[in-house]
Image 1 (cartoon, rainbow, N blue to C red):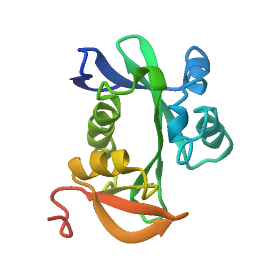
Image 2: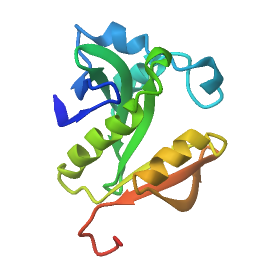
Image 3: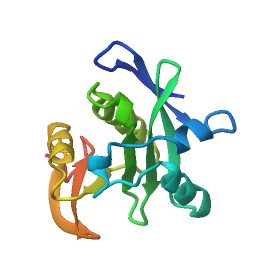
Image 4: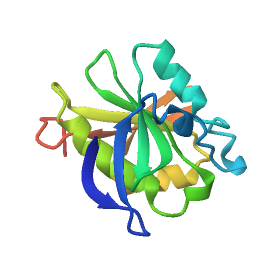
Length: 163
Protein backbone atom coordinates (compact mmCIF):
# COMPACT_ATOMS: atom_id res chain seq x y z
CA UNK A 1 0.00 0.00 0.00
CA UNK A 2 1.15 3.51 -0.86
CA UNK A 3 -0.16 6.26 1.41
CA UNK A 4 0.60 9.87 2.23
CA UNK A 5 -2.34 9.93 4.71
CA UNK A 6 -4.25 12.29 2.43
CA UNK A 7 -8.02 12.44 2.16
CA UNK A 8 -10.40 13.38 -0.62
CA UNK A 9 -12.83 16.28 -0.27
CA UNK A 10 -15.34 14.13 1.62
CA UNK A 11 -12.78 12.90 4.16
CA UNK A 12 -11.97 9.42 2.84
CA UNK A 13 -8.37 8.21 3.10
CA UNK A 14 -6.90 7.77 -0.41
CA UNK A 15 -4.38 4.97 -0.87
CA UNK A 16 -2.80 3.17 -3.81
CA UNK A 17 -2.62 -0.61 -4.02
CA UNK A 18 -1.29 -3.22 -6.38
CA UNK A 19 -3.86 -4.83 -8.62
CA UNK A 20 -4.64 -8.26 -7.18
CA UNK A 21 -6.97 -11.21 -7.60
CA UNK A 22 -9.24 -9.52 -5.05
CA UNK A 23 -9.54 -6.08 -6.68
CA UNK A 24 -8.84 -6.43 -10.41
CA UNK A 25 -12.52 -6.57 -11.41
CA UNK A 26 -13.33 -3.36 -9.54
CA UNK A 27 -10.31 -1.68 -11.15
CA UNK A 28 -11.19 -2.96 -14.64
CA UNK A 29 -14.72 -1.54 -14.29
CA UNK A 30 -13.55 2.02 -13.54
CA UNK A 31 -15.30 4.18 -16.14
CA UNK A 32 -14.84 7.94 -16.59
CA UNK A 33 -17.63 10.25 -17.78
CA UNK A 34 -18.68 9.74 -21.38
CA UNK A 35 -17.68 13.38 -22.00
CA UNK A 36 -14.05 12.35 -21.31
CA UNK A 37 -13.99 9.68 -24.02
CA UNK A 38 -11.98 11.88 -26.41
CA UNK A 39 -8.92 11.36 -24.18
CA UNK A 40 -9.72 8.36 -21.97
CA UNK A 41 -10.84 4.79 -22.64
CA UNK A 42 -14.34 3.67 -21.67
CA UNK A 43 -12.94 1.37 -18.99
CA UNK A 44 -9.69 1.03 -17.04
CA UNK A 45 -9.57 -2.55 -18.36
CA UNK A 46 -7.59 -1.23 -21.34
CA UNK A 47 -4.85 0.03 -18.99
CA UNK A 48 -4.86 -3.23 -17.04
CA UNK A 49 -4.22 -5.09 -20.28
CA UNK A 50 -1.30 -2.78 -21.08
CA UNK A 51 0.16 -3.48 -17.64
CA UNK A 52 -0.34 -7.21 -18.07
CA UNK A 53 0.88 -7.57 -21.65
CA UNK A 54 3.72 -5.03 -21.66
CA UNK A 55 6.58 -5.07 -19.18
CA UNK A 56 6.84 -1.27 -18.90
CA UNK A 57 3.57 -0.30 -17.21
CA UNK A 58 2.55 -1.00 -13.61
CA UNK A 59 -1.10 -0.57 -12.59
CA UNK A 60 -2.29 0.62 -9.20
CA UNK A 61 -5.79 0.62 -7.76
CA UNK A 62 -6.88 3.91 -6.20
CA UNK A 63 -8.96 3.40 -3.07
CA UNK A 64 -10.93 5.87 -0.99
CA UNK A 65 -11.28 4.13 2.36
CA UNK A 66 -12.26 0.60 1.26
CA UNK A 67 -13.76 1.45 -2.13
CA UNK A 68 -11.86 1.19 -5.44
CA UNK A 69 -12.48 4.56 -7.08
CA UNK A 70 -9.81 4.76 -9.75
CA UNK A 71 -6.75 3.49 -11.54
CA UNK A 72 -3.32 4.92 -12.25
CA UNK A 73 -0.32 3.37 -13.96
CA UNK A 74 3.34 4.26 -14.03
CA UNK A 75 6.47 3.20 -15.89
CA UNK A 76 10.19 3.82 -15.89
CA UNK A 77 11.56 5.12 -19.18
CA UNK A 78 14.89 4.15 -20.72
CA UNK A 79 16.39 7.49 -19.63
CA UNK A 80 15.47 6.79 -15.98
CA UNK A 81 12.51 9.16 -15.81
CA UNK A 82 9.15 7.94 -14.62
CA UNK A 83 5.96 8.28 -16.62
CA UNK A 84 2.43 8.42 -15.28
CA UNK A 85 -0.27 7.17 -17.60
CA UNK A 86 -3.83 6.03 -17.44
CA UNK A 87 -5.10 8.04 -14.48
CA UNK A 88 -8.84 7.39 -14.36
CA UNK A 89 -11.37 8.24 -11.69
CA UNK A 90 -14.78 6.59 -11.91
CA UNK A 91 -17.52 8.94 -13.11
CA UNK A 92 -19.50 8.38 -9.90
CA UNK A 93 -16.51 9.55 -7.83
CA UNK A 94 -15.39 12.61 -9.79
CA UNK A 95 -15.43 16.07 -8.25
CA UNK A 96 -14.04 14.89 -4.91
CA UNK A 97 -10.37 15.71 -5.44
CA UNK A 98 -9.38 12.12 -6.15
CA UNK A 99 -7.15 12.82 -9.16
CA UNK A 100 -5.21 15.45 -7.20
CA UNK A 101 -4.96 13.26 -4.11
CA UNK A 102 -3.86 10.30 -6.23
CA UNK A 103 -1.07 12.39 -7.74
CA UNK A 104 -0.08 13.80 -4.34
CA UNK A 105 0.20 10.20 -3.12
CA UNK A 106 1.97 8.73 -6.15
CA UNK A 107 4.56 11.47 -6.78
CA UNK A 108 6.39 11.22 -3.41
CA UNK A 109 6.46 7.43 -3.73
CA UNK A 110 7.96 7.59 -7.23
CA UNK A 111 10.57 10.01 -5.88
CA UNK A 112 11.81 7.29 -3.51
CA UNK A 113 12.59 4.87 -6.34
CA UNK A 114 16.29 4.43 -7.16
CA UNK A 115 17.58 6.79 -9.82
CA UNK A 116 14.43 8.92 -9.84
CA UNK A 117 14.98 12.40 -11.19
CA UNK A 118 11.87 13.44 -13.10
CA UNK A 119 8.27 12.44 -13.66
CA UNK A 120 6.59 12.97 -17.02
CA UNK A 121 3.10 12.53 -18.36
CA UNK A 122 1.07 13.64 -21.34
CA UNK A 123 -2.47 14.83 -21.87
CA UNK A 124 -4.66 15.97 -24.76
CA UNK A 125 -4.37 19.75 -25.28
CA UNK A 126 -8.17 20.13 -25.10
CA UNK A 127 -8.26 18.42 -21.69
CA UNK A 128 -8.21 21.68 -19.75
CA UNK A 129 -9.03 19.99 -16.42
CA UNK A 130 -5.88 17.86 -16.73
CA UNK A 131 -3.82 20.91 -17.73
CA UNK A 132 -4.99 22.82 -14.64
CA UNK A 133 -4.37 19.86 -12.34
CA UNK A 134 -0.85 19.12 -13.52
CA UNK A 135 0.18 22.79 -13.64
CA UNK A 136 -1.07 23.24 -10.07
CA UNK A 137 1.11 20.29 -9.01
CA UNK A 138 4.21 21.94 -10.49
CA UNK A 139 4.46 20.17 -13.86
CA UNK A 140 5.85 22.29 -16.70
CA UNK A 141 5.62 21.80 -20.46
CA UNK A 142 8.67 20.25 -22.11
CA UNK A 143 7.80 21.43 -25.61
CA UNK A 144 7.59 17.81 -26.74
CA UNK A 145 4.51 15.91 -27.85
CA UNK A 146 3.58 12.25 -27.44
CA UNK A 147 0.88 11.01 -29.82
CA UNK A 148 -0.42 14.59 -30.28
CA UNK A 149 -0.50 15.12 -26.51
CA UNK A 150 1.30 17.79 -24.49
CA UNK A 151 4.24 16.37 -22.51
CA UNK A 152 4.86 17.89 -19.07
CA UNK A 153 7.39 17.06 -16.39
CA UNK A 154 8.13 17.53 -12.74
CA UNK A 155 11.85 17.58 -12.00
CA UNK A 156 12.84 16.23 -8.60
CA UNK A 157 14.02 18.86 -6.13
CA UNK A 158 17.72 18.80 -5.50
CA UNK A 159 18.61 17.84 -9.07
CA UNK A 160 21.07 20.17 -10.83
CA UNK A 161 18.46 20.79 -13.56
CA UNK A 162 15.62 21.56 -11.11
CA UNK A 163 14.46 25.07 -10.37
